[in-house]
Image (cartoon, rainbow, N blue to C red):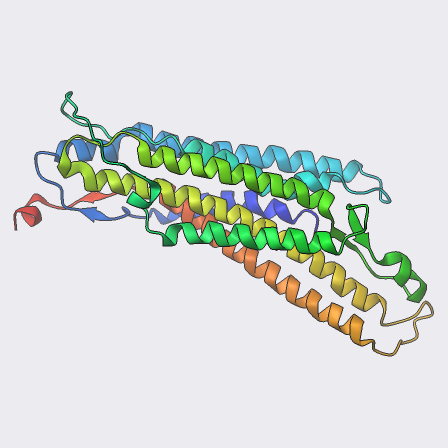
Length: 325
């Protein structure tokens, strides 16, 4: 269970392969005037845009792999009776991976134009100019959920702030128990969330404020390129927050179920009368496990969506006959 964060980079690789096979079409079809068609086609063919996306995905996978290997080595070399300090790195892997991806996708290439002359555009642009408010709901909700779980698990942890272990008390009745990540693990996650939020805000502002095409007929195509960039970074951040929250739920749920199972028999294997408190803990553990699985499934959906937006053509130019009609 401690290595559940490994699922995030694995999903990235699987999603890349699946989407490469699927060969998804353009994001949308746009009616562009014949005079601006050459510039628009240049954007669809532009290697710089595709290389940026491929480079960002490759850097993301490399970052996730290095962090995961480091955390795995740390967990293997940790003594059984010592606190698992490598858990810091394992739990932070999705968030740090998302920080790497968002930072790369913040560099939106300028829209190419056939004309060398440009005019000033003084219109104030924000991320909301190109993306609907619904795009930003998911990362905010995921961040709120993760912060709530960190505070909740920190509240039930040992006073030393590392973790709560139920096993000493339960051992007298036949074993069982486990650990909840305490605030010593939760505080780095909160710091990671702040870092991810800062990088995401900078990326969104960078995408929104990049120079726009002078030709007004290219503005819709330009907005489509920016919208895809916004969708990629918000989905990436959301997936990292969800998989982290899911990992915490699975860790806590597994411990709660173990506590319940450990109090069902005594040291000699004789059944112990059911205890309402232990049954409630077991029920909460089951709910937490299923919630964790659901959150990880949602994270997979967001990862696939982000890579899908990053690897498809931004738009397809409609035939000129349709424009003239």
